[in-house]
Length: 324
Image (cartoon, rainbow, N blue to C red):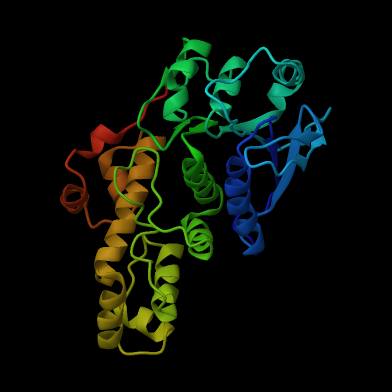
C-alpha cells in the first residue's frame, strides 16, 4: 500500500550543458520513494535536443519535448553550467514555444539551481516568491522584475511553484516534495536509505526534526522512530513502543537516549513542532487550531515548546504568497 497511490508524471526538462547532479540527485530521491513502496512517480527525461551535453562530459539521451501531457504531471527544470543562462539560444526558444502550448497542463513547477532563470523567462515566477543559486540571483531578478527573489534560502515554495538554490538544495527540495506528497515518514525513509541526514526545510534555520536524531545504526530505535513518525500527534505510551521492539520500557528509554541523544517524549514534541511549522506556512489556522491538530495539550504548551526551538514567535514564520 503506497502513501500516494495516484501516479505522478514527473518531467525533467534537461537543458544542454546541464549540471548532471541537478538531474540525478532529485531523480534518485523520487526513485527511492518509488522503490520503497511509498510513491508512484513516473520519471520522464525530456529536452530540446536528443543528445544532451552535461557538466562532466557524460552525455545522455533524452526524449523530445512531448506534444501531450498527462493529468497530474509536474515539470522540473534543471540548471546549467556557466555564469549566465543564454535565453536567446535555439534550445530555450524551442522550449518557449513548447511551453506556450502546454503550460496549463502541469500541476507543479520545480526549478533546480539556474533552471529558475529559464522558468522566469517563461513567466512562471511572475509575482511569485522564488530563489536560485547565489551566482544567478541578480540574473533571476533581471529576467523577471515582478518576481520576489529571496536570498540565502535552500528552497522556496509559493503555491504550486518551487525553486531551489545550488545542487544539494535540489535534493532538499525533492525530499520536501516527497514529504509533502507521501508523508514525512516516507521522506525520512528515503533520506535514511540515501544516507542524507540533517536536511532542512524552506524557512527552517535548523535541521529538520524528521531527519535529525537518526544518524545512528540501531535498528530497534529506527523502528520506534518510524512508528512515531507515522502519527506523531497520537498519545504514544512508552509501554506500547517498547512492546514493538520486544524490550522493557526502561530499556527502551535508555536505548533511545543513547542512540538519538534525546528522549522519546522530546522526539515526539520535536515532530509536532515541525508539523506546526508546516501549518503556519501553508494555512491560515489560528494558533489554538494548530496546537490542537498537532497533538499538544493546549496552546500554552505549544508556545512553551516552540520557544525552546525558535527565538521568534510562531507568527514570524507565516508565509504569505505575493499576489498579483
